[in-house]
Length: 117
Image 1 (tube, rainbow, N blue to C red):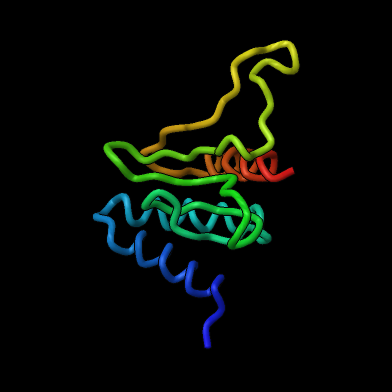
Image 2: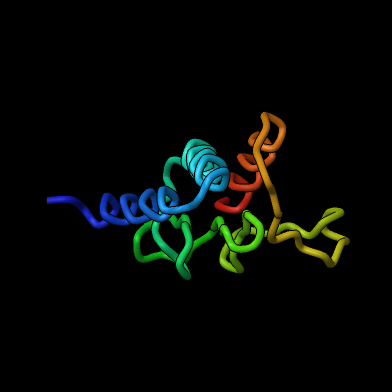
């Protein structure tokens, strides 16, 4: 019998597989980057799109969306740092993307690791 985590992962992968190209390819790669950066995160569907949390019952910390634009976001439950250090008031919480390259993947991995600390 499949665990809840296995069922949730299947739902996330099915959601990504249902997307049109090129979003399907890019979102699958984004999923892979997220779970590689933080293997302890458990994927699940959150507001209709892939979300990643420390457990099936804990709050989503990181999510990806494919609406009009693809985006990576961190929820209010994530560890967030103001832009410009502790003196800044703006807190980055979402980033749009249309494709991934090595530099973007590295930055995504940094964002994900920072969000779960």
